[in-house]
Length: 89
Image (cartoon, rainbow, N blue to C red):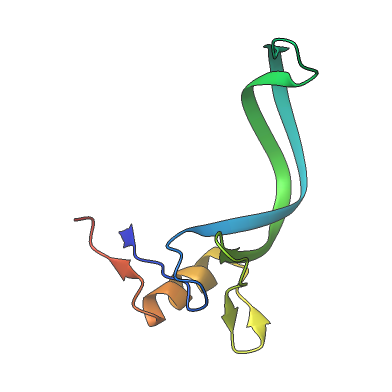
């Protein structure tokens, strides 16, 4: 199903998931030329849980009334109820 998210505050069409208590492991494959910044390779994440879903543009948290939407089923229901799920076309 295609996502048709559109933020009611800023109009962004990007939705993101905010995870907490996550262990992230990233391979360092080199260093930038003439710089102190590493070049990163593959990344793996383990554990954690969803704290919230939010608009990527402005950070507006997805809510159902006063409650944050935090579960997969709740997100699906919220998107469906707001007409933001469509076919795969």
